[in-house]
Length: 94
Image (cartoon, one colour):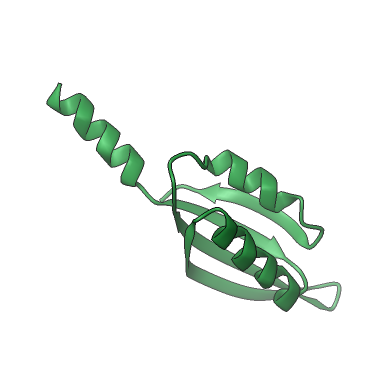
């Protein structure tokens, strides 16, 4: 019984990490900020990179997410992927 409860606690408190590759930094970061706020998700940027593709800047952020258990990581990925500036999004397993 105790082990079962411990697994539940660890699972619920485990942060999720997602990596997002996107264009148009200011517009897209505003979208992320609004989305996370709307869904009561605390997002901490743990990695950031800038590359160039076709002579345009491309941004890659890795966020550690903490939020309500009712918001599944798959749902977050699906919702964010609908933004036209998002080129790739994936869950990162630490």
